[in-house]
Image 1: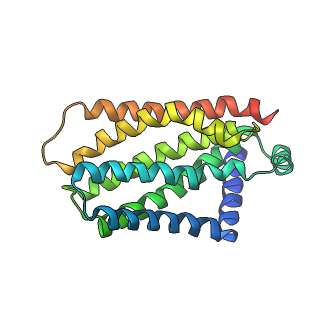
Image 2: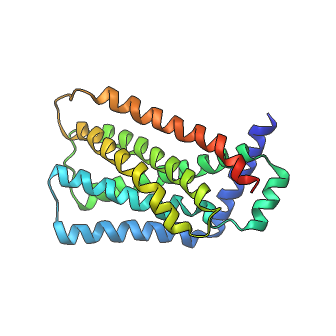
Length: 219
């Protein structure tokens, strides 16, 4: 019960900071809108496969800008204060929860802008929204975990790129293949395996974060 209360308090702290520093949130929204608008000017309304690939590339950049900064903006003194009032597991779970919700909001905004500017080649829009939210959650978990590790190193940006590339690329390929089902009326085989693989990957990331972050926390 105490652990759950600590998670809620830390989550509320991140939420209040995001509300007070609204320029960061609106900055990411402006980045998303400007990028999609430039794609519209350059490509008009692309075909379904290109539309799908562009969407997930934008999701990748949104994750880097919106989620990965969560640990990088925490000072050493602030982390020491959190260490004195909450446990490492509560802290990392609160970060995972906040970034998950933030990424869900960004994902929904991206889907809306893509459909307004780049057309709507989707055969099943609701299914694509569900898959994109699922993918947004997966990306947020990975980048939160990577940011937690990179925040303890001197070369934060370089370490995030080195660690993130082998994790994100296979995940993006699986998400693009999974989202193809929303563009066709014919059911594709092997999708259940992809879903289970992505769910297992998310569970592994959460488990690794809970197990490994206390060692980083004590450093």
